[in-house]
Image (tube, rainbow, N blue to C red; front, side, top):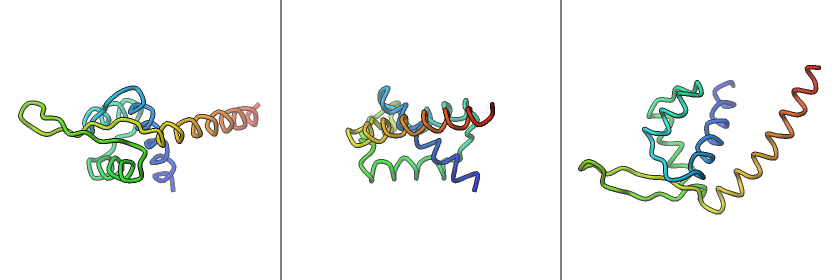
Amino acid sequence: MLREFFLGFVKIHILYHAAQGPVYGAELAQELARHGYNLSPGTLYPTLHRLHEQGYLARESRVVGGRVRKYYTLTAKGRAALAEARRKIAELVAEVLEAQV
């Protein structure tokens, strides 16, 4: 169950970073690890592919150092989803923190 919660957080992180500019898998893995999400490639890359297939991320292939690297950026649909997630997060955090008082 905890894994499902964290995967939702990971998706929001991915959308957030893709909104900042083009990102690629290894870069995202490092950024997510910095936040305590140590994802295997078997979790991260299928998540990126699904977000792309669902229309939240655009994908562009670039050759870097002789290898093809896939970069992801946020689409309009992804931007709308991120905006909604931000509203829901703010509401949840306010409620949860209020309950602790």
